Image (cartoon, rainbow, N blue to C red; front, side, top):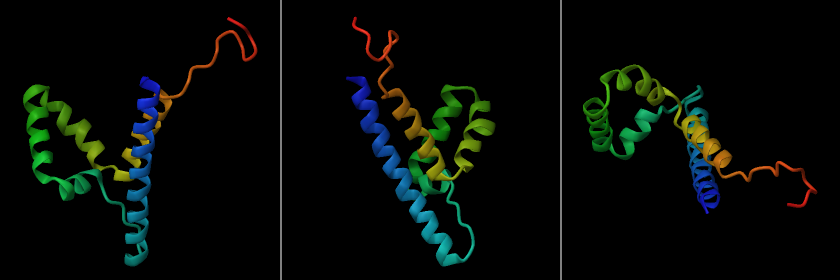
Length: 107
């Protein structure tokens, strides 16, 4: 049950990463230089209010150090890279486990 859910989430996240990568490639071609859109700017373009509220929530509910060095580093990464990494984690979690007794063994 959960493997199916993780596979679906992984494929949707991978599709989103592909769309964001194509957008960055298109912007790079039109600007004649490499353009990498950070996750923070993508998030700010989609929903700026939630970006600010998530910052406040992380600083209030957890230690403020979590926001400044760790999450700000993740927000500065290219958005397609972050979504690709999340998709790989989801797809790995959705992968079937190998039979510990071997491929042709009966249980």
